[in-house]
Length: 307
Image 1: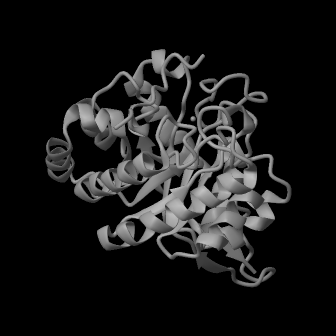
Image 2: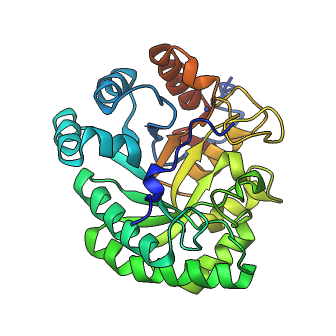
């Protein structure tokens, strides 16, 4: 079998209320929204092993961890499952599987085989969802590429459902088209998901890739039922490379508006901080994750008032 998609390297591919007067204002009602469930992905703390991450994330107050398959394989799936269970740290997601087009170094059949393996890994560690990248066009027409991804997802969907794992299709910025996926827009991805039409297959919403979509905030209510995970990172310019993201709050993306729109629309899943960044990977991780936790918590809201 060719090198699985889990082995593709990321490195080297150069995150006042005004007090109402009792007589002059009507009482306000409180609309409850889901509490923010915050995860941090292993791709953000690339130098750390899972053993480092488990303790540090719990200490920093994170609710879950997002796992990356190369780190998981290096640590050992069963050992990881035991460590996560002892720490009572849930797994928000597992990245990545897919590559059905042959653009990630796998044939179609190898991608299906690797996808089944990834689903079993996700089941073992208790991951809520498995992130899927469709694959580059790899010389195919767009229509044929779409057919390959739809067929691949249909083959994996029942396997995932039986394992109680969902599949989250990740659209990515066009700069990732040669290595990762031909799916770049919401429209492309939603059209593909409608063709798959399976309850266990949905959307991985990544702020870095989708923040410039037209009418994005107002469309979030229609996306919530399909969204299996929201991935958070920031940027300060149009992407120049695969690894130039920033930590949440350090860039241009309107993350507070996006997070609060998801919460207000009833999204109750995880928000996973996932930052691919050559600069971030060199930083002091304990300080980095504590700051990230505080920054994103401040962007969210637990309740909103209406008159």
